[in-house]
Image (cartoon, rainbow, N blue to C red; front, side, top):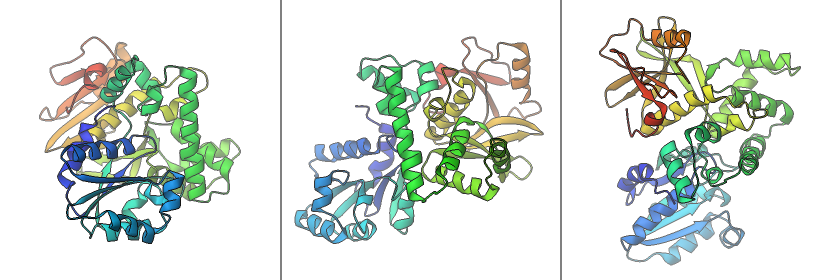
Length: 393
């Protein structure tokens, strides 16, 4: 088991808080495991814990609704604080009322869950400010490498560029098995969760659009361009419908959008986005054969790593020249360009020239999969293998 200290250190200050602790994120990213790890820490300190998994039918049958959950927990209360873990809580009728009541008792409440009836982001809407939320993501490369080693497997950077960071996929030492697992996960998230949750009637249309979006990671977003593309495939869909579908994917943590930063206004411009997949495997399972999109997946992975590190990320417009990422945290600012390789002269000139006329007070970084060091006096080159091992820039 990989101890996900990155998340545990965020949750620890709230172990005794009366706020409801929500562990949220895309399916199968490890939310339940983090609840287990929090529980292990508390038990090691002699704390009283109660874990209920509502994905299990016997638990659902025993505790079907809010009243029965409150009654069940009440029977377990004593003088000492009870640390209560409720996994897949959305399966309890009136779960939100139960959580709001339990937090006022001698309980510290932790919850997690996601399915077609309640997507992860909707937890926050149901609890009216009485919560603190912790976003969990699939493994970053450091975690993936550790997990693979624990399973006596190799997991190269190329493996990560193709198959991403879903834990259960990494444990499978067979490409066909990985594809089968990831396709089943995709079907559950995209087709079961989203189509059922939002009662999508034109399922074939929706699935074709989702396939196009997830294959187009690290590209500029235009709802109109997607609509135009689908029209060329004999599927007529309106721009408002495209925007609605994108919203569904964001709510389920399937994609992320990154806005443009304007140097003139020193603010985000919300009319322009680039889209990225939550995990690059969502791109790779849609690729025909083995011609995986390593170039765009590499940029996608850099974004995911920056978000994991806690940076606020936007796209930067340098007077018409796009720089992939503007990353800011704790008053420190970085401009980051990403390329698979800059060994060819034309590519080198294109990628490095994006930094032209930018003040040297800003740290400029280029990240590539090259082994040679291409750093200059003004631009620092990170080899991808080194960048993936960083805690922060």
